[in-house]
Amino acid sequence: MALNQAQKRHLRKLAHALKPVIIVGNAGLSEALLKELDSTLEHHELIKVRVNGEDRDARQALTEELCEKCRGELVQTIGHIAVLYRRAEKPRLQLPS
Image (cartoon, rainbow, N blue to C red; front, top):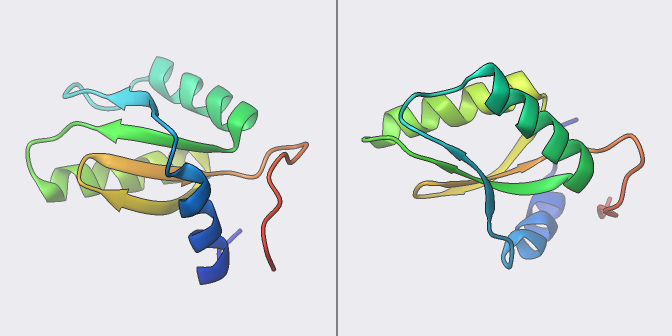
């Protein structure tokens, strides 16, 4: 599901007060981290993830890989923080059209 600009703007507004719930360390992505990410996205739909990496390109690559593996949409990245969204089976968030 591709998000349009109005939906991304709405999700950024909702994510502003959130704290990162998943932290990707220098070891990268593990099966346990991906399982936790999947579970967290299913429960919350919208989360912040802290991606630790030495340079911007490494963080961007990890973020893209996270989105691909968890079937989520990247809403925004600021520095080390990425905001991810994935619609749940029973959606809790209402998105504008």
